[in-house]
Length: 466
Image 1: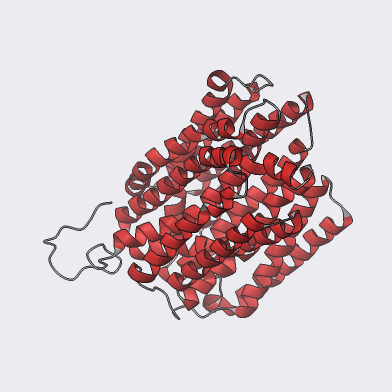
Image 2 (image 1 turned 90 degrees about the horizontal axis):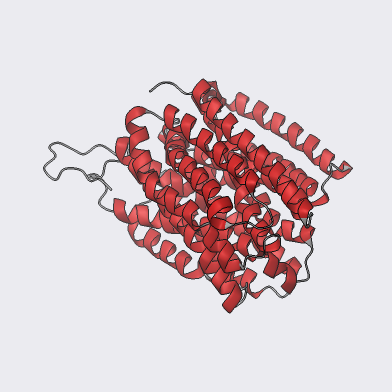
């Protein structure tokens, strides 16, 4: 991380490295906190078959192990970011990390599936508090190219955490048991809380009034929509209950927009933000790209274990190049995007991701790693490395400092919603077996390629040249 020159004359600007002596610790704290979500997601995917055997859970119940986390995470991200803008981002970061740790402990001790699902929901609430405020703290602490490099470092560390998760989780599942994967979160959470408490200054406390009506409507709308998608994915059809949830979510969302329009600049999510073509484009791109990515992260370990006979450790190691490539390149791409603008990285990166998905169409029951698995993973990782840091940095730069937590929460909610749609598609794949399992995976891979390439087209059409 670059630092300001020690002989800089005059007062340091707010947010510069010279003005804040604890920036390195700030970066470490936000990395530790956000890495909880990355570690948890990658580890749980590898452990799904073992959880199913231990708790006598079928395919639909296993899908709820993922959905129980995604539903509150998606519903509460927006209010989590807005609460940080009002109550203080450090306070929300610490509170969310503590809740995530307690929920992880409960997951590891869960004697039956119902308790595991409830604890996973608590993890989602904690993640909704810590994720947007982690990024908002970075956006408030760094400026210019330093922000791009900081976000790139944050993304790199998250990718490394995700890389460590699958092989470590696979080893724990085989040698200790699946419950140990949740205990893995506890030391990371403790480090994040301690560093944030001692080293990270509070930001935005009381600066932005909390729009309680807007927050309630947004949470209810996102909750209804994500619940409907979750129900749809678990039942593999659009039932009457799911359709009712969709309608209720749309009505609540329309009411939220009307309230925010009336409140104007005092709104939790000022609608003037959507007057920016770039802001709209960035969030549409996020939905498409992370929808594609969510399908890969969930399905590939499952199909390698169930369809190709990989052990949990082997499946975890199979994903290792994905996170290593992202972790190695994200910091560089964050700095590059800060210099040339995000348009080209966000156009080319998703297009490369789409090519990687097309390579996975060759995967069959033999699943030769070097010839069928690695090429697709490596190409997808290369494309994501070009997109992750520029996208995150561009979203933070697209709003004023007072609304950075809200904008981060909104963008994270869009990403999680894309992942939830991918989970709905994944449910249809997980329900298959034998040759039909690989046929369904090929359809999902083709959809992923289409979504990723559409994300690249969106970036080219909506983002400015610089």
